[in-house]
Length: 85
Image (cartoon, one colour):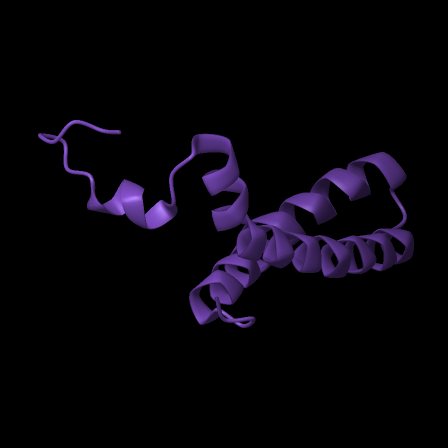
């Protein structure tokens, strides 16, 4: 497995920029009401959570394999008409 998977990185960044940061900023502002504290907290949390999300995406195939006994490629190869293992 490659360390830098472009699709995984793009997916994690899209989630952060389009959904997580705006929503996190709004909710945090509603609680704190102080824009400078909100910006500092949201930036810090999103850097940490982006790294965690990316590492989770990298680890997920191994986690899924351990949980299901199948690899993600086995899941993609299965068709609706064929019985699963």
